[in-house]
Image (cartoon, rainbow, N blue to C red; front, side, top):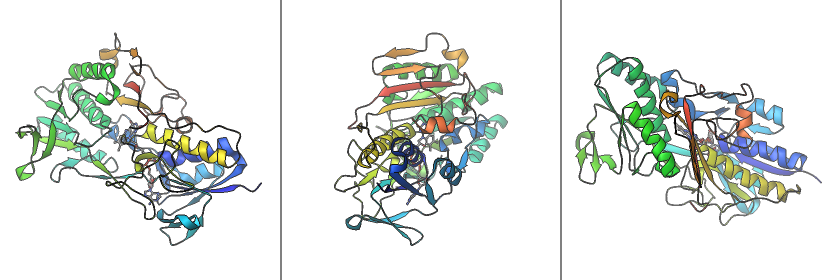
Length: 392
Ligand SMILES: Cc1cc2nc3c(=O)[nH]c(=O)nc-3n(C[C@H](O)[C@H](O)[C@H](O)COP(=O)(O)OP(=O)(O)OC[C@H]3O[C@@H](n4cnc5c(N)ncnc54)[C@H](O)[C@@H]3O)c2cc1C
């Protein structure tokens, strides 16, 4: 039987996971083409580590992976889908026919507050290094890391705050105030009480103030005020996380924020043979591990349709976070590991290989060159994990 043509639009976490999964699950039953405007896979989560020299944003050419695994790469993004003809139009003007199309173009990060520094990950580390230098030299005495309303993956704000605190501590600086300001009632609330307790202790021990249950918004003169009550945010320097917007693909349904609605097998609602995975989808939590799980569900479904002898499993989200802390061991070693029901937190790895983004296929690929903790030195991370409701 001739292989079916699968086009994957994207070159990030979900796209690479899907390409690897399809090769493993469907073998020669599929001919995969990956269409990505960017030539490299970029591990953006490590952008939080760069200002502190605790890691770097790795880039891997998609072409090398394609040669190794056996798929084609086109240097162009998806421009439009013509579902009646099963054709995808690409940004270089070319067209591809597909038997199955997987959309994984990610989301667009945008500033939530016009006049404060937004941590956009790519290109941002040098700005953050400047902030750390200002604290060290006494030009600034306080910094707030702000999670805007609507952000569902706040972990980078905690990492930046904890690593800044570690830097301040190692310099022996007194009188520097560091805060995490967030709508969450408790630290990393999405992971449940046990993880919140562990992270709360970590913040306290690191001297980071937690300002939770507030609604940060832009006030007069570009300053941030905290609702309810319009209290001004007291900080000389502010670093805010971006909010994400859907890119929207013409010819494909989208919700009011531009995200693609899918079912539990990653099928785009109302379309035939079109799937989506990752930050581009309407699933509320935008996170790399979730992106890989959605990609796996879609890949299993596509592989089964291509004749592979598997029973596709639906998306059953497990949220896994690897929090970079600067220096965790002295604070969390004793009594910090919790394991109760749906949630866990531990200084020991909770998944293997212990990559920053967990993924059945992506994890082993990321750790290929350095099998042990490629992302972060041992003892400087805490892993948190919780089972989520698949309906979000
Ligand atoms: C600072 C930071 C820290 C993070 N920390 C973590 C963490 O610790 N753990 C974790 O699991 N997640 C983390 N995340 C989230 C994680 O990076 C994302 O959720 C994940 O990358 C989403 O995967 P994706 O494939 O949907 O999108 P992306 O990885 O963003 O990939 C999208 C891809 O699509 C391409 N593209 C864009 N437009 C088009 C188009 N029109 N057609 C085709 N392709 C297109 C892009 O070039 C890119 O290659 C973090 C994110 C940031 C910014």
